[in-house]
Image 1 (tube, rainbow, N blue to C red):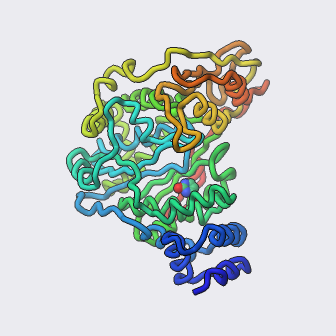
Image 2 (image 1 turned 90 degrees about the vertical axis):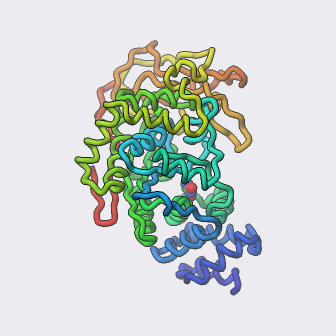
Image 3 (image 1 turned 180 degrees about the vertical axis):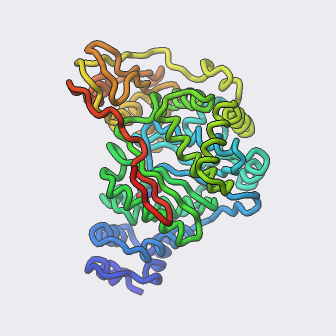
Length: 442
Ligand code: URA
Ligand code: CA
């Protein structure tokens, strides 16, 4: 087979057959096909797309390009959760123990943060002692014993995607629905769960800017899952403001503790409940009303919080810090960001705030950047709120070790869109739900 012909076929808008897609992924993973040829193919795919069969075929090839995790030794339906990348998105840290506390085994593989999006692993590592370097064997043992374990992405999971994603990143070929869907799903499928609940974000900083595109991405991932005999459900959710109030690692752990204790910001709590309901109803084969009841009871009774502490301890973390959250890393210097005008908050640019939090030390500019767990941004106002000139919009928590760039203050202030008249403050959090049989809009 000749790779040049494969590029030409896609450039001319033709379909690639399964053998051609296999030749592409195998050849690229093995280093036999060079980056420059793959770049040309990616650009052809960007413009001409992949149909359902090609997308499923690409996902399968990437999925089987490396190791896959076998979770069959764990009893029950294993349900995973994935978000397409939020800002201040504290959900995984809350949803995983919440779902586990209701009896559904959660074997979670998470990533570290890069750029404006945070990673669950970084957040949890702000708890002294917590470790994610478990062997697969111990990971499975812990899920059996505690219903919940979390590891970092192991080196050899979907290596084809790792290589391709890095190339897409520098060739302006990330934003294609088939490429995003196959990339996410190849990793999720390799991680071995029976079912996957997806949180597909729309808005500033999300891959998809419109509801139509986000629903299309959600449908594509649901179809891939079904093509692989996995139950996949996707919620399409709004990111026209960060979730909750906290952006930053230890700040978000504290926020997670509030929600797990039955309190905390209402938008974050509601999204966590909705994601948990999907996972619990699949995992326990119950209807969503019963799943909602279980999840709410677990938050109200302290069961979810107890499961979080149990899980943190099982992975070496010191639960004392969670019983006394004031002991968690906290910043010795804070700056209040003041509102320059009076009015109603219409939108909060989550992407910009994510980037500001990153510059304060809460995120990584490059893979090598060091984090300051205490740093970040705590919002003081959200969409729909009335704010008077001079009131605090947000508080920046500065790093003790990083040099502070004074421009960040005006960037944080500028992230808040303030309008004179009351706007429709009922920002819808969940816009659509996609499953195999239906797409519902809310
Ligand atoms: N996340 C991924 O893992 N892959 C993409 O292509 C986009 C987001
Ligand atoms: Ca948050």
